[in-house]
Length: 303
Image: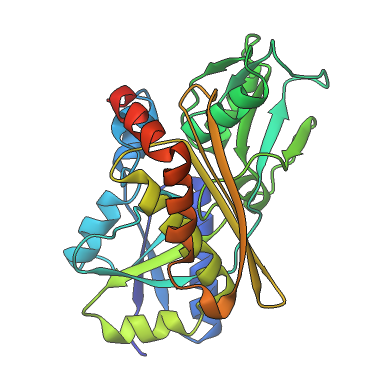
């Protein structure tokens, strides 16, 4: 391919890091590319809580439009930000090898944070999982890019913040008091990077397929299918994580009430040859075990 590939990305340092990762892959294939920085609704509005903005698509919509208007050739996203149903005319072209999937607690001091701590997060899932474990703790809203969120630790009323480990690792950020929250099931596709292109652009699709990471593609596909089946168009505290070892896919999923008091989880395994609809099947088991009622309750609480 002789054309210069236009790579669309959000303007945050993490988003640009991810876009440059794709740029490095293309460069290794002797393909020229250029980064096109585009503002998203989620970046422009730093005051409204994410759940009140609908979450789904607020970080991807502007890039979707740029693709459809042929202003860029591919868009690079944190996969967990991408809606489970893509815009008409767009297609998932590649998934890069997954980075760290877990969440990290960054503390203002080395003191233990438990039931009486104040935790900052903009994630319904993180807040619900924390409240489920520490029901008397206090949750406050957290928005902004990685650096902006870290500044929240300067607030004397904040004991800790919860962030994705992948973002910190990619930006080379290490905090003095940080610990991995291995008990916290991550967001579906957390730690993975997705490349999107136009459905009609077969040449770009073929190019991206050449660097698609199969195991990550399979795992995130199951996680996102689980999410899609549970959501039903409604934002909810949902976690999912799939891992493959010796051709066996192990899956953990969770659905919680917004306040964290109710928790429905599942652990299942299947051979990768039987992976079709596995994410949906896991979600259906949650729904039949109280999930339908819980989702109906959540829908009444969302804006």
